[in-house]
Image (cartoon, rainbow, N blue to C red; front, top):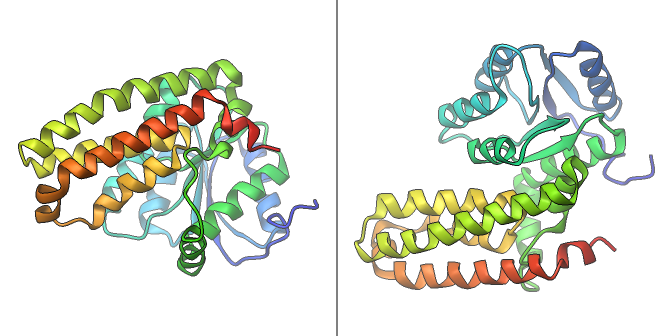
Length: 266
């Protein structure tokens, strides 16, 4: 394993939610050899209990855990952990429809790892999300972003989706993103015009989920910035904010149409 990410040693605690114990043991062993500690859950209810009560740094959830649907687990955990630091949740996915994956991402999934699991891909994904969730790393990343413009689309997200389901699957996800965002942006403009801050925030949250599904990183970050806006700012600057979202959406669509995410793989 020649990856710099895969050789990084940590003391992180990772939940492995996998009802196939053979697969679970293999994943656990890969992570343990890289210095991680494992909290194992063989069923959906066990995984949810661990998420809500154990000290964890990251969770890996099989898409088909027994006893409770992975989408439900993620949704219930995100709802029950409001106010806490966000815990990265990665899905272990074999075959999954675009609509099912989109529902899982809307519930709060942060990324996917294809099955059968490749050790280097697993370690790179885990370590990348652990670093992104590290406050000191986030500060360095934010400082680095100030040196240049934000990419419209993070190609890694789409390439991961392509590994899971092929080009047709990616096209389906992109089509759904364009349809959902095209519906949400006029609704945002309407809620800004009526100064309905609650509806405005709900629509921004939904748009952020759509952007995350396709790696539209610029749009995602712009939606995320609304969390620090006060109700007064939303009322006074809502229209301008929607215009910026519209512009960023158009930039993402151009990048997707021109397959810039493929070119960035080089």
